[in-house]
Image (cartoon, rainbow, N blue to C red; front, side, top):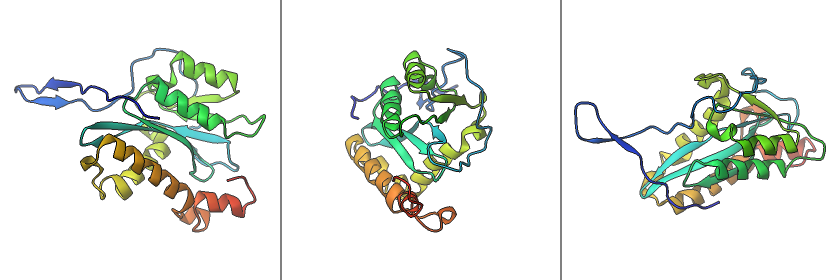
Length: 211
């Protein structure tokens, strides 16, 4: 997904005239009732499509910011689906959700866990979940450890690729292309000790599961 560049939001520093960029936050208050925290920090799963995690992160580029919205399977850490864009909006999250749902076998009910960001509380997200039998779960307010596995994925991506490869020197379009490359590498080539030194895709193939 590609979108137009979002404007920067700045405010003055206390006691000075220099602009200060706000840190990105998706929280917009308790706009709709939050579902229970069904995951309760248990990020393990005995089968694919049992528990999914999602979140949104931002990556700086030389001409703006890129936002990445993935869906992560707790079974093996596979990235089920993802979107990239220049705005952290409903389209970014909802498109990713539809792509992830498109990978589900028939009659599969999965828990989708998120933080309390506005993307996961807007009517369209809720409607899509209801239509497809998705079970919603949310972290407690202001409690990042409740979705630490998703944040951990972002940390690995930035440590392994974003920072050492200096993505901040790339354009937004180039960053999006690099995200595509990383996601493919993460699913198909990046080995994990917990998976017997196999990538998520190869691990599923070994288990006789659809990759």
